[in-house]
Length: 149
Image (cartoon, rainbow, N blue to C red):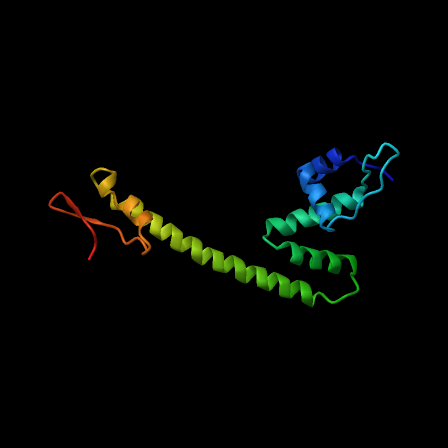
């Protein structure tokens, strides 16, 4: 069985060494055996497990969900209903974020499109950032910048 150092594991899974240490600390990766000189030794199973964790995190799964998914992966005889529920919850969270991001894009688009003239004291972008209300843009009437009605 081939053994890998933490650096080689990091390279194989395309993650940083501190990430591996963190995942070990919180129990997502089992603590590996060590050499007499206290170096960690990993195997190909560790590469696969770390790749699984990385992919789940890229999909936005929270740590607790990753923990559950790993447990399901470790017990393939169990039904995958829990995995489906976690995926549905993550999909709902992503869809919610998309709605929030679309709202942000719209507000920023209105800020950029306002093309308000004048110094920072009359800039609608600066004003919008200072306000608590959502940005609604501004208009130019006869060369003067006015707030929307």
